[in-house]
Length: 114
Image 1 (cartoon, rainbow, N blue to C red):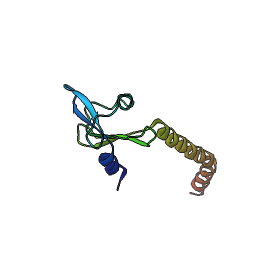
Image 2: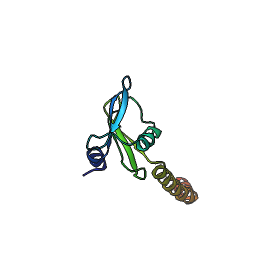
Image 3: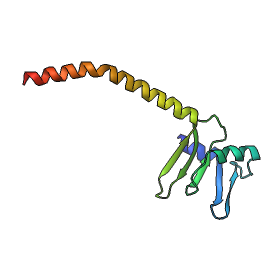
Image 4: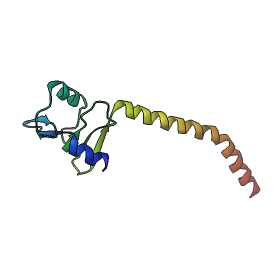
């Protein structure tokens, strides 16, 4: 089962419309607590999203999913997860930058052979 499927099955859902207002319910259809609603609203999910599913835990990597106006799934990740991903990307760029001088020397040497 994918994260998307699990979140849609077990997570909170956003019901209603932008015009009438949104309400949030748990997997059983009961309204979420005021504290949980506050956490969900802090995610600032786009009002145009439909079929919105929201994680039940603030610590979850994947916080929410929904379909955009074009019908594509959009994902909202936790700030901590996003930071970890950015740190990992930065580390790989540092390794690439360290390898650049050697690659440049090799390319220059190969070009001189022509």
